[in-house]
Image (cartoon, rainbow, N blue to C red; front, top):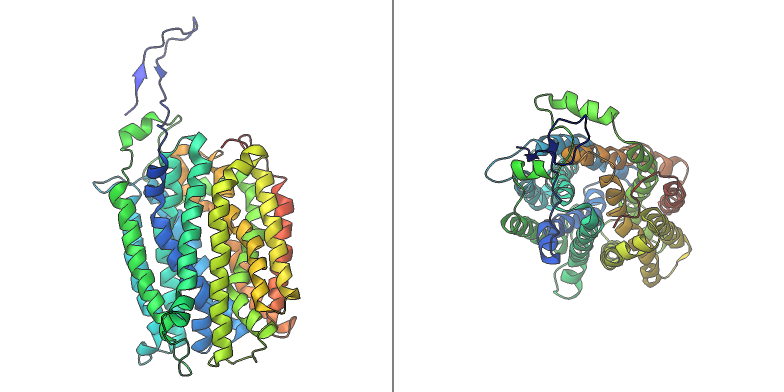
Length: 464
């Protein structure tokens, strides 16, 4: 439904009615917090996955050089799922809303995968645990993508342009907060609650298993909180906030392909930045545990059951909490930095800090000093989760916010897929199994991302 009024002061040759486009109301900080709270639970689950998936897969028998192949499950499912979810969430409206039905379905499926993944050995009678673990990793990531993609579109749905940077930064704050809790929980359970951090060969320690159970409960509860506290604009009201033609119906996947070919220039330029950034992040998530275990803790290749390997893995999980904590705090001040400079400059500075943090890991011998490396990585992570979306949201049609946010995920998943296919091979053939050099390459790519972001053309880059 459109709001149409007669044009009172039209030019002499104008006889058509003029459409009144309303401005979206500004929301309070509490309302923005409520609609993003589900991201806390999603990132809690992601943090458990990022900090422990390599450890779990190595325990079930995966070699270091094969880890990146198993991790391909995540970007492959994301590349397929997110555009489809975005496309259909743009066209969904029922008594539960537009985006909220996808939140709940994704949350339930993710919770199931979180419970099953560390218990893959219990299903060894069906197939090898490594296959079950990899399958749970794929299901978990696909389900998280179902829940996560509509959250990005919800910010653009609900907020006026003037509040979008703040909205995405609030999401980043909750992402960082959830990741701190998820990353630190295995360490806290083992060091302060007395839960065992070691297990027999081929078994997952109890501190990891219990952490995944807690993650499932938190994921469900936080997304349910967002669903119950956040109302979405019905189609009639949403239509009054947008200019341009309505979303076309009935074209299915062909419509996604057409939208992909029609993507704005800013989105294409952001694609190069995303390639460098997410290639680096994938290397960090996959290879940090074996890199630090080998390079700093001097753990021998193939040793996954010793206390020294457990200490290295637990410390990596704790360090991941550090960088997520930094990103949560940084997200609150990032809009101010972007307003004083520009979104591009703020993002370039952040990626440069992340590259320096990754490169510094090679030169550290005392694991305690790795905390300083995480500060730079945290600045990059905080910006990666907010600035590209703030830049992008100003350049895409409001009526296709969901599908374009999903298509934008291609620029996140493609570098991870490339890294997944070739990263492990590079570690084996060129680095001779020394995963620390994958972290060095990640630092170089992050710096290249900082350089490429300066070439993005955006008409609204300073809008906060």
